[in-house]
Length: 229
Image (cartoon, rainbow, N blue to C red; front, side, top):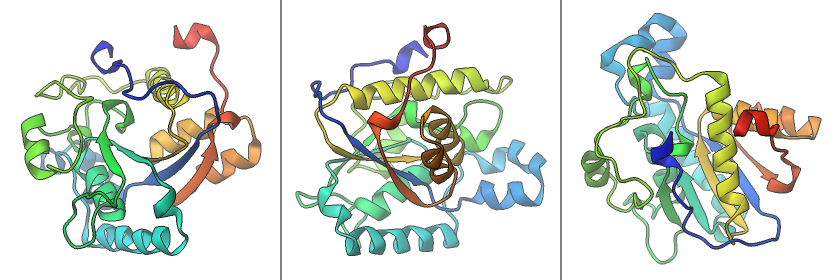
């Protein structure tokens, strides 16, 4: 994990921040996995992309984000470098019709810490960095400097403890930045880990649901040092 512990490129700020958690739209591995869990081991699902339904979900969320006025308050969108997440981030927060950003859209940044659970399943393996840059040139990949996916192990699935530690590192990134309103485009599994870190029972219930929800970073608690050391 050492390769993804870089300094988050924003100075520390003491005020509370709001994280808007967005789960990616339906992807092909979600469909195939519901039919047969063993299908998740298929190389044909490598870096699974959004389905037609997933794209419709993204368009619906985009409309909701704009209608609510939330779009104008977003300062940064942080996404996993997996295709399904970048498609969701670009579709929701990019420039409509072009899947790109402009001066009127928030910056979109890909961060390895934001990834789905690592290992074994090809659907959770990312593409080469050069391929990601080519397919999503409007996304900032400055936090990523490794061409190949050296975090994905074909024989070992990331443990619950390792995933929890990774979520803590991501939380620390937001705690140490000056931005106030940030979108975190992530997966169901990572959302469940965020729910575990929230001290408020109602917040836990909210985070376990699908769609878009917001939390104050101040409501989250850190695990004991024995876990995060």
